[in-house]
Length: 318
Image (tube, rainbow, N blue to C red):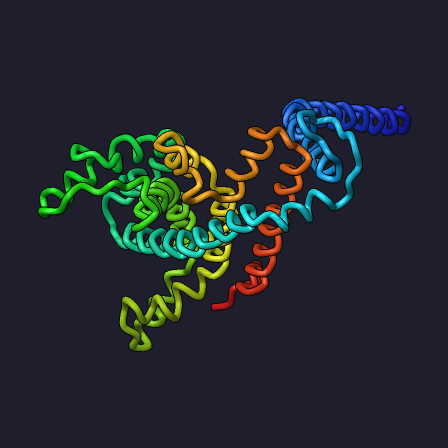
């Protein structure tokens, strides 16, 4: 009887294991299934459909009509306005990426160096990240840089005896760039500061102690030889995210430059604003989706080159 109970007990245990595994699988798909289905329906299928649409003539319809091959792509490369939009966003990225990286790293070093109130300062600098780009752009446009004497920026200038400045409008001098850059910095610096803080806290304190024992002074010496080299992966990630965000600039440009004059939106028009006008304004979805894939290819190419330059993912060695 005891010999027969062994297979019975083993079979019962295997049955319980299968039921437990089935419950785990059902629970997993119960949580992940809706998200996975949403990604397929609202992300992957539209991306695939847009890629197909970019090879067709699709005006005022999202249904492919006439196959044109690469004509939509060639049309955009021959379009001087599209090329100018790429130049505009490249110049924007060349300034905003280094500025954001340097400012975020500087804030992270300052916050990491204090012993009291670190949580408070982290929260203060991170709060703007939760603000909507649309809301912040309208505040910058209608309150801070509205060009009127009672605007905050002009009130500050008045205290120094300066006349009011029309911040958004005339191309010479291009004061609108100060408005666009400042709102982007205010919105995103706190997020990247948190990333740098996480990287700083991963650096072993023993390295600094060993450097001090060897006679190294603090400040720039330890930053150059210990802190910054060990933040290479974090810096690479911050730069990659900054580049992607810069090339996807849309909200601040269209909300700050539109509505204050018929030609102001043309002062600084990044690719997404230009493609928005083609796809939504002109209802040329084939040409608009082709431009979106050109922009995506540029972002991917720059990201791969940047990762290779930084050797992103290479193991750090102290």
